[in-house]
Amino acid sequence: MIITNNLSKRYGDQTALENLNLNIKEGDIYCLLGANGAGKTTTINLLLGFIEPSSGSAFINQLSVHENLKATKRFLAYIPENLMLYPSLSAMENLEYFSGIAGKKLSSQQLKDFLEEAGLQSEAFQKRISNFSKGMRQKVGIAIALAKDAKVLLLDEPTSGLDPKASNEFGLLLQKLRTKGVATLMATHDLFRAKEVATHIGIMKDGQLKQQFVTKDLSLQQLEEAYLNTMKYKELAS
Ligand SMILES: Nc1ncnc2c1ncn2[C@@H]1O[C@H](COP(=O)(O)OP(=O)(O)OP(=O)(O)O)[C@@H](O)[C@H]1O
Image (cartoon, rainbow, N blue to C red; front, side, top):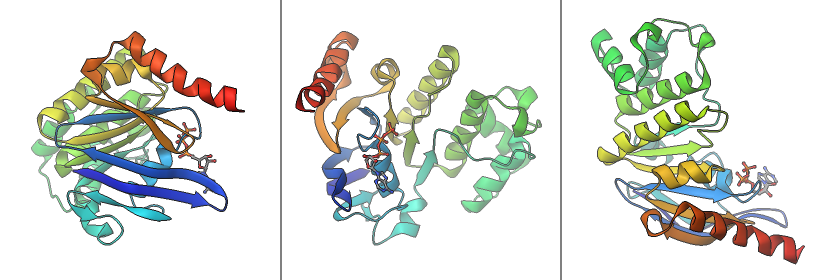
């Protein structure tokens, strides 16, 4: 579903991403961990076609992002740290608008069903987004992904700033999407949430993927040790 082959991005002499190789399959939740500047957002921006690779390639559902950008967007849903929705529109109106852009014309009942499936309380359906918490906005984002029937979900720091309950709810939603076969790539600083929701975890540093794990093969403590050890090399080197 999501494949990158030696994907690289350079800005002058600065290497933001170096030879990244990922193969994220249907039903996988792959969490990219790494300190600030590790290359997580660069990876997501390359998969979205927001930026061009310096070398290497990326594929969404077997289509080259570089050569078929428009076609790849049909399969994608993207939830950034702060999801841009129309604040003066309600949850239903936002969902109607964004699924319209994705070519889906939904009935009022379908809109409600998707918002409910995304875990939004029914009292909030008709309320303006401007009054929503971050957790509620993220649920509208998931509803948009559900309505679009996205095969690939890209998430950049989706749980930062969420309280533990909202973060837990968000994790449960990702599990639900996983059972529908969605392939998810999530950039995060949250080791605990990564351990909770991911099927696979990659640790990045300085634009390189340093370690990869199948999540069930390690404990939270082992993950934390692996993360800290990877970061330690940087301190020793600098
Ligand atoms: N437009 C740009 N011009 C120059 N350098 C850039 C640009 N965008 C990113 N970089 C550099 O690329 C590197 C990777 O940045 P990136 O934003 O991908 O890191 P990140 O892992 O997402 O970090 P964070 O956790 O802070 O979001 C950083 O050193 C950053 O300064």
